Length: 508
Image (tube, rainbow, N blue to C red):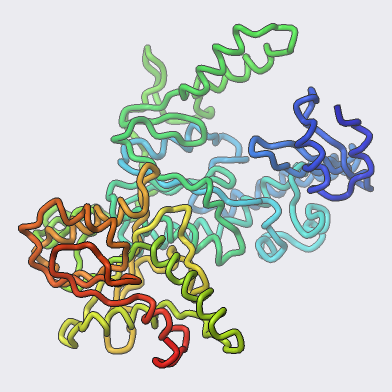
């Protein structure tokens, strides 16, 4: 067992992490005092992912002074909280009411803010609080976890983002409900095509305000796959329930030795499983409990479109309306080829400074070399990718998320719409690409498909309907050995990348 005294001499978070990884299981407590300062102690709590959460613990006098500020801070928050989409750290609101707002929708996107409290700075709340209050509530430039005032200040800091998200959803005509539970952002909606738009809106607005999205915790849920989990609670089209995970924990706690103080855990879990709403809520009770059958949907931001307006013959399931010419890109494959070619040309020409690869120039090269005519100036560019691999190697711009719904983007003489579609959790990027290709190929509105992909994946795709292969197909790949029996126009992708890097034709 690691000697607990070893933590007293530590000043760095990572130092504690390295020690705890070796001996954390030997401790009954997960709290470690790392720094002793005035007027607070600094603790680190181990998290499930092996990392640590930093907690500031004030001495009694300082904590009492901050608590005196809470009534004033709550008054300021309620005064400026016009939209009332946040359900954490506010009286008469809780996670149960938060989850209930999303009953009745088909899809839910939930995203998590990384290091929420530590990302808040004075500029976020300067229009709400004076310098004297901020001096008391900020430590090391942020409202740190452990301070009684920090939750309220964090809510104040995100009010502008809440408004921005609601406005953006309305502007994009997305029928939705948006709520926030502290650092958990949740949007529910009915149209599958809006998934990419919602992810972009949340991430873009948060990033612009100085908050970072934790992509590993981004979830897309479909009610058709079973109950949706929001803040540890399960919902369906009828009601709200404790999760299976919670019920398993209750059963486990009931069968454990009471000597280990599990009775406290058991009582807490059972209370959590009741899914009680806050007091003074307008929901009526029946013999089975609360009536969840009618969702509130208070934050619907756009009217629902009529079916005849959105579901025309030219619409493609999942993709929507597309132009006659479509560029379909396997993002994983493009990333691989860019990386390989940059490394190759750096070794070949060590004294030459390569240009930063401009993605828009690369797209233009695809268009020109696929011999797209000027009368076909309206083009769709579709990126297929896995959510975990949304970044392109050494390109500007480099984040696929930033390309979503770039309407009327002019690349030279062409009008280009760039969209991205990520795969489900159980799909590979190539499988997702193949599904998108099949939908494009069956569409009567699409005449030309320009593909950036590995031919091995396409061989399987072409087997589904060889009699339908009547479209003008282009394939950008790194060699001519495609093993494809059908008529496809081949273009070497390495030449396109070299041209975008600023290399002369003779250097290719």
